[in-house]
Length: 253
Image (cartoon, rainbow, N blue to C red; front, top):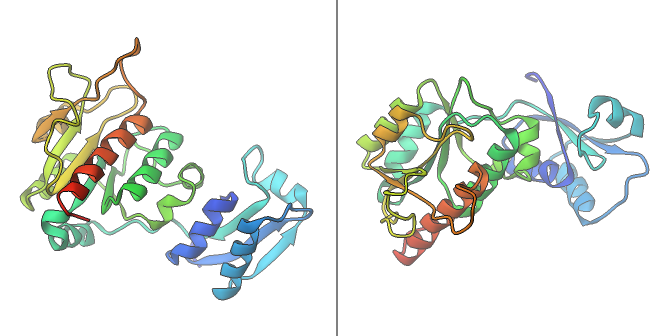
């Protein structure tokens, strides 16, 4: 068994069990745990997969998951199963005109990444591409913030994000970068119905210069209030579901 990490929270643990993507050691339940439908489902999934579950003291959770919102449930799991970059290229080619990609330009906040992965899974994204360096990866905190949606997504870590963007363009993917520029077209005025790659920038600096220049076009979310922009998680959700809406209208899944 490779090095283990604790995934925690009822929904993240359940989705990890359902995804069948990680090696799992055991499910841990806190003594005195308030039982609900999710706990029943977790136990049933563990039994079905022949994963042992164990009742442990509350102090175990206090020590091992100190300060985290664990809800009295955790699973010892192997590392996150990132998609191999070579398999990513094959997936893009296979999906063809229906491919839907998301590129994240050096996000730093686990809560933002988790929220974006949850939206991406719900919107039907085929793969999410993140850089290996100077960016948060899919940590247990990210899994928790995504409510376990990360366990069902194909996430690719690449050495060079811009290079991955250019490779996607070679397969006919049109890259759309989300920016603050008021001269760019509105997100709901752009054609996002074809093979599309949405590019979301860093929480503080937005898209890097090279990432922005690599995009085929740029879009913005208009703001009617006094603040200039949404945070990365909220902005991504708005844009992802506009892509989803246009793809549904065009008859693409």
